[in-house]
Every structure is written in C-alpha cells, then in structure tokens.
Image (cartoon, rainbow, N blue to C red; front, side, top):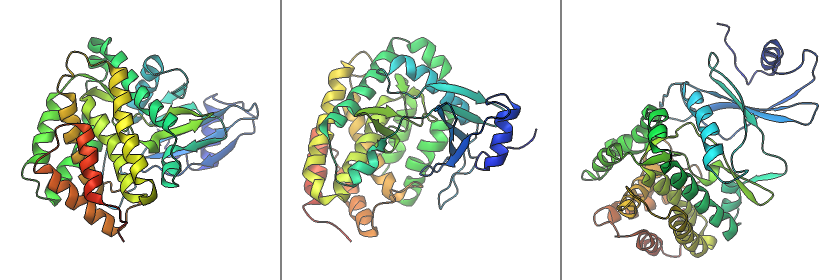
Length: 343
C-alpha cells in the first residue's frame, strides 16, 4: 500500500483525484490545521464552496513524553460521528463525508466561517452563560439518548482500548507513577473500568467545541466508547476549573459557570437507572483529571510552573477527604485557590 501523509498538499491532491473524491481537474485549496496532538489535520476547500476537514491519526502523539495509540482509532471516530448525529442536538455534530481504512483517514464537513474555539474565548476572558448551558445540555442529551440504545451501543462501542491508551494510562496510571496518591488513582481506574452505563465521549472539553452562529459544535470523537459517564463530567469540569485557576479575573464567574454546567446536565439527563451514584464518581474523576492535567502525560500548556504546583497541592489535599457533591467540590477548590495568581 502506498503511504499517504495528508499534510503534504500535492500528495493529498493526487490521492483525492485518484480516488474520485474530487474531480480530476478540480482546483482545491489545502491548509494545515494546528492545535491537535494526536492527528494530522487539514482543511480542504473546493471551488463549489464546500469544505472538508480531513484527519489522519498518528501512532505517536505530538507531546514531550512517549505516548502511543493505534491509528485505527480514526475509524472509531467515524463511527462516533455517525452515531452522535443521531443522539446529539441538531447541528451540533459535523456531518460525516468518508473514511479510508487503508490510510486511517476520516473526512467530515468543516464548520462554517466565522467560528470561534470556545477554549480560546475562555482563556481570553470571554464567558457567555448561553454557551455553558448548551455545553451541559449537549452532554446530557448524548448520555440520556444513548441509554435507549444501550444494547446496540454496548456492542458497537464496547472496545475501550482507545480509552485505555488515550485516557486511563496517560491521565491516571502515569500520574499515579509520578505522584503518591495513597491508592486514589488506582481505585479510580478500577472503578471506571467496572462501570458500563452509556456512550461516553472521552474528550469532552472546550478545546473541542467550536461556536458557529452562537451554537456549539462538538469535535474529536476518537475516544468514544461505552462506559462511565462520570469521566466525561470530571474531564470537562477540570477544564472549567483549571481556567478559573488560570484566568484570575474570571475566577468567580467560571466557578459559577461550572456549577451551572452541572445543574443543566443533571436536568437534561433526568437521572435514570445506573446513574444513582453518578455525582460521587464525578467528584472523584474531577479530582483525578485536575491532578493529571498538571502531572500526567498531557499537561495544560497554559499553566505556569507555579500554577501546576499550586493545583497539585490543592488537589492532593482534597483527595484525602473528597467533597460529597459537585457544588461543594467547586467551592472548595476555588476557596483554596484564593484570589491570587501564581507565577
């Protein structure tokens, strides 16, 4: 099989023409997209005005420490795109175009312009509670609707190997090797492996949200699996709380936004069978992810060394006696941060 690197424009153009994805003489524009560590990603613009995003999974992620995962995860994302289009609110998932199993390649329609990345807006101090509401409703809707297809989804998305290689090992297992947590992370790994409840996105964060016409669009589904919904909540709350840590002027507002996000999620989820101890597990996953993002393989790039140290100290203190519910966790984390920034 001829190799293909989609970040080489001429090679990609030849491939698209040879496979009939575009016309033999069609003049297309190709632009490399940045920001991700696990894929080659490019924008393909056609003369008709149609635009695609092409993704090609990397076997070794672009991070400072060694981190490997099979590029076959591209095809898990393709499945995720097609299923999420059925489960998520309208226009919140980019439409699927095609996949190529030989080259581990996925194409989807590009989000229209102009759009904004939600992570970038938050780091710039721009917070809109309508976006927070949509963020909670989007995840709650996916988790709730997937429960109706539990048998089918558990079969299709039952393989959790990508969740293991992209989340459990680099976030929890690796961090446990670096930081003594008195069994906290080991117990969390064991518990989340035991829980098989609904469809879990696995990468639910502001980084993977684009805002187009004031509407949230969710990206990056390669970690999707049937498992523990508390992970999605802990992972996403970690991003809101870490930004509250970093963006000092927005700290009180982001703390309230985190509470609002949780409130909306629960209202939309309408807690059902298998979710009775959800909040307890969300607290634990939030603490685990808060620590992992300053001590694991994938550390938040916007933190200073002082912020990493401070977050580590706070979280390890909270792990000794975890708060009983999500609002109290948020309040305690923010209280321990105080009102200062850290160099």
